[in-house]
Length: 446
Image (spheres, rainbow, N blue to C red):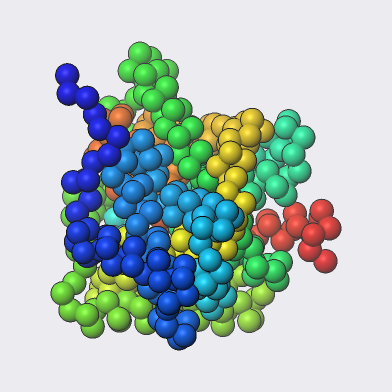
């Protein structure tokens, strides 16, 4: 048997689209120049060069090293690695100044705009409309149970509800890494009036722990579903007990947009459209301030998509920008977050026993809620638990694929995608409503 190497250089042959053999020497030159102060005085040029050099290099290491790749090293290493490099003085102040330039001038919200608009508008409207009557209500019931169990977990562990629900349970249920890294901190910041972006590393670490725990629970439930198919409500890959013709047709004909376009105009249109929706959300927040503008943007996009009121071309363009953000801009974002936080202890902190208890109970609550909803709306219990609950408690698309794959349910991936994208959006709306209430109750918000 061939022994596995601790590294696999051929796993990733480019960084930020640049061949590795060219990127590495260029990145090392920029890092050394930054450390010695031999960089342009124009901080914006310096910031782009240094952040991409450090983030790209660490992300590449996280991808080619199997043990790191298995724990999300592509993002984890730029996030926690840069934090440690700053903490021990290996990266000089020019690197943190570069990170601050991005962090303090709205780059995080640009990423949020890309992910929020693209993830919702890329969902096929016919498929969404056909399943909304039966699937979305089950999703909401599951989320209510998950939040309820989160409050119960706070009581059982002695942790305050404010901390347990919003900083431990919530990051696992808000649509993957983007929710934990950017959307939640932005939401909390807008409510409290203080910058919460420094919490991103901690929230991301918690989301990773949630992913691993949800995968373990998925494997256990899958074993039980095979052993006790009737008791577990095993639909053998079918989600709805009696699918309507409209739902079946929509599922078969669901439109999937291409990942990118050779026309740069399509990409820049996606940038404008995504940002414009966020501005409209801010306008709505001006009239009804109880709901923060990120949540308003989510509500607006979901409604427009359900009623097919957004031109298909704009949906495609938003999807292009979203893909760019989730593939490349996210590395820049987590690098900036890591450089702005020199604690380096986020992952060890996330693995506290009380955190594990809270996350497990939140996931089990989501599963129980999915079972209750499945009974009411005619879904198979196991398939509902997998797609509605467990796929809503992971790091996003890669987690959905992993969970559907281990259960041999890849045909359910479209539903899992709805749980991650639309479900994440709905959870953010719910969080935006209850967060100010709890924050005010505990005296954090006046």
